[in-house]
Length: 435
Image 1: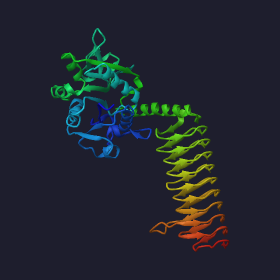
Image 2: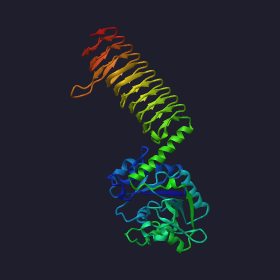
Image 3: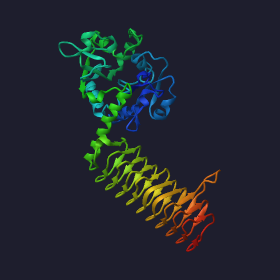
Image 4: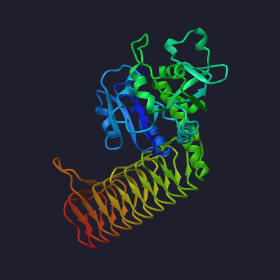
């Protein structure tokens, strides 16, 4: 929506998280919480975003720098004071969307509906509420006899009767800026010395401004304040991710023991077995079998691959590749079509050509291996001389005998053979034998 700016409140100390990492930078399904909030805002149609961060904001740079504007709250004086730090950056817009940075489950549609309600009703203030069974840590919504919101009482300020209210403030608002900034300047500190943003509701009601609200599902408005909340939000997000993948044709044997990050893409008819972790920007094509007991991170996997009980990191795997069990494919590796990797094989920063096989107990590091090469059990590319790494080249159709040690830099020619137990320190030409 072009007539809205969004402001994310992310300067709170988050002391209950008991962590040196700022609360909103803790990750859920592979992404910082504040990044999930940003994603929902952008999907709702608002691209002009400001984040209010604390004075020690270095940890925020990787997540926010170059993506959105930053306003700094030098002193932690509450949410109202935090919003006021955006006055200069947001002075040229008619409406603003304000949301807490610890609401990682908020949906884009909900934010879109909130802004639409604000616009169509011509309200001065519109807030998001939710009905919860356990309202602890939430501000309580107070309505008049006509059902209109007239106040939000923070839990620390609530009396016994107000604490029993189970309609709560979600932490997302729309404001007209025509009255907002002056109202923020007029806020009085609470008992704790903080300036509560929620005091604007009673202020708006006192001067007969129009207040509107919409209600949403309680799961969306879960605020993450501690590690227990983080775990609960992770379960909800992980369940949603698995359900979305299954709707597109992916089979997940046991969603409760499958851990898939938000940015992962999986093709139809792929089967994911229990205790599998798929992280980062991984893509998996169709008709694969993944797991059980796999960890796959930031990798690309072609169609019809089978990966069992193995770890894959930063690797490109083409079609019809089989790996495992108990192998480790490390960053920078490329496995071309029809490669077969058995058990206890480690591959690092290496390319294996089409049809190459390494059955068991090998280390292939910093290697360029051609097509249809057979790597015997116990083969090691000795790539490090104590000072620097060197590469090993094995050309097409070579046969590497069991327990061969290839001391890099070294090249094995086409259709050449090394005898079992060989230690190769010099190049072997094409069609030759080395023993």
